[in-house]
Length: 160
Image (cartoon, rainbow, N blue to C red):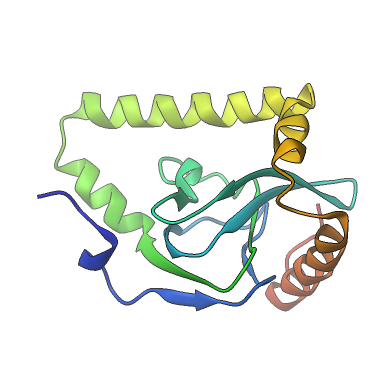
C-alpha cells in the first residue's frame, strides 16, 4: 500500500508569508505539501534568492533527513498552506527496516541533490529558471525577508 497524505496526522496550517523553517536551523521534520504552494529560498547577503516553488504532494526538508546538518534553505508559504509533518526519527525508523544499501542510496542521492543545487546557484542557473516562472515578485521577496528576520529573532537564530 502506498502512503498518501491521508495516512498521516492532520496537516498543520501556515498563512501566506509564514516561515516554515529557516536556513541554518536544526532539521527535525520533513514536510509534505497537502495544499498550497511553498517557496524555497536561499539567503544571500541579506536578500532572499528563490530556488524553487513546490506544490501539492511535493515535499520539503528532505535534504536534512539523512544527516544532522542544518537546513540549507528557507521555506515560506506562498499562500495559505497545509503541510503534513513527518518527524526525522520516523523516517529513520522506516529506513532501519530497509537493507543498508537502500539507506546508502538515499543518503547519496540526497548529498548529490544538495551539491547540484549549490552548483546551479553558483552559476546563477537556478535564478534564471525561477525567474522564468515568475512566481515570486520582488515585492513579495521584500515582504518575506521581513518575515524571515522576525522568525529568526523569535527562535534565537543568527542571520545568514
